[in-house]
Image (cartoon, rainbow, N blue to C red; front, side, top):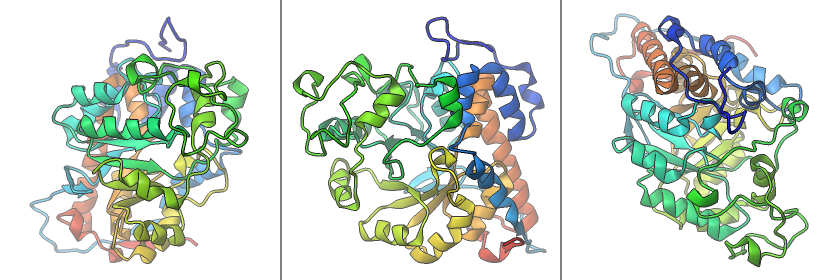
Length: 402
């Protein structure tokens, strides 16, 4: 385990793991990452809510489907190219937003975003990133970056984050809609975990500290709050750690009625992440979202949630192809990407495996994750008789378990 002397949870500079070339599946990287990361930081990334049944179910749900090929199809020329909200991508995927990549490697999101840019796929930066919006943009001049937003109770500050992302050239706004409160995470409670690490979009680099703002359910600092100065807010208290402050400052009253205002903050396409029901998918259509992500937040906040793979068919039936539908959760194989697209998804997000690769070998580790997925997807498409992602169809997918 290699950690920073300044903060034991942050990963320090470390050479690439010489075993990287022997990695042939994404699961190999998780075991290697456990050796590299501080145990509490690893648990924060790997863990789920409650008994973690939903966490395991996210992967198992993909295994309830099988692939059925079309034979005697010319696959001598194969293309995995796609696009996400109009942004070209060499694969039908993007790296999902995840907090504090600095827990896995000293280069943090810069390494992850560079690997994504080199592979030609989008990278999604979290509001709670280790590196700032501007740092990541400067490090990836040829890349495609999306920005994920947690709406803050200080609406002016939240808008400022979006405007910073737009000014830095980010190509889409991914709004997380499924986290009004933080979940009950036993691993973090046992470890006393607080995410008390530097966050690039707050503090001096981000223009303000990430301070506590009092109980969001009892103070009057709601969505109309205009102050960005903690000193002018009577509810402000001593600075909180990152995880506590996220819970205190996030706007728990966010509703569908707020989306028009949020959309007005930039011209970036609006993606709603955290949809699991047909009714919510239809509402996303009604409010004019450009894409939705079928996701249960990595099973990190609520146990017994429906797995994204199980929710996907109903959501797709509800929207009928009228909106780009991505899926996020439990995908560990290129064949599962093909399955998601055969079912009707437009693309997928890859989360934890990217952080495992980052922990093992920095930028090279994330690149290895994307290379494995690319090769597996190409082989799967060839064997299915699908020379392009557009040739993946519902009759390629068969449900084998209830």
